[in-house]
Image (cartoon, rainbow, N blue to C red; front, side, top):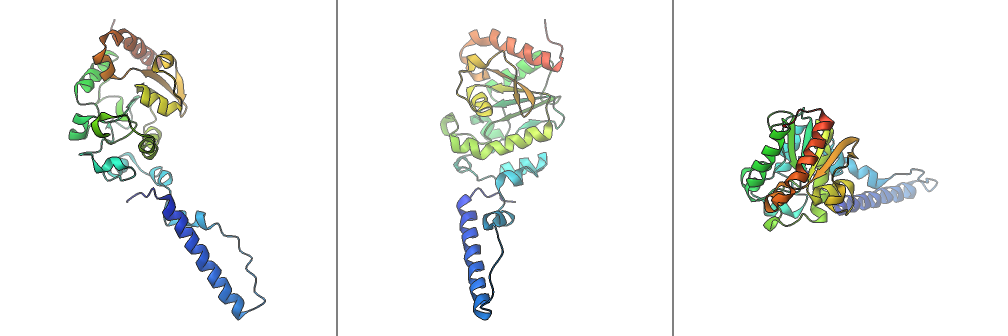
Length: 246
C-alpha cells in the first residue's frame, strides 16, 4: 500500500465529486421541476475512503507492516537521497524505547539504527543498565531516512515521519522512553527548551515516563558529559527497577 500525503489531491477529488453531484441534481430537477435536493454531504470526508489520511492508515499497521511501509515511504523528499530507510530495531515487548534524531551515514548504508561509533557507545550505555538490543530494548529515530550531510531534520520531514513513531510506541507500549538529543526531545514535547534544562526530569509522552539525555555523538565530542549521562541512565533504571553497575 502506498500512503498518500497529498492534501490537494483529496480536496480536488472532493470538488469534483461535488460538481458531479450538482450536475446530477440539475438533471433530476430538469426531469422533475418539483425536485429539491435535501442531502447534506461532506464530500471531503467522503474522499477519505478513496484517498485515506496517512495517520489513519498508519494506525492500522502492525510492526512488520510498518517496517515494510517505511521501506517504500515517499511522504517527504528524504526518500530521494536515502540508501536504506531505518525503521528501528528491537522486540515488540521492549521495556525501553530509545529515540534518536535521524539515521547517519552508517545507518543509511546498513538500514539499522545506531550502528556507527555512537551506536557502539549507546550499546555500552544500555549494557550498564542491563539492557541489550536483543532483550527488552527498541531503538528508533524521529525520522527514518538520513538527512543529507547529517543536517537536522526539517519540519516537513518530521511531520511526515512522526505518525510512524507514534504507531511504534502504540504497538510496543514501552514502560519508559529515553530521548537522545535536543531534536528528539523538542519534537516529542513540542518545545524549544535547551536540553540541559530538560534533563533529570520525568516527562510523560503518550502517558509513558520519558527521560531526556545527550546524544551519544555529542558525548563522544565532549567526554565531560559522561557523568550527566550516567545520572540520566540511573534515572531510567530506577523507572524500570533495573539493577545497575556500582
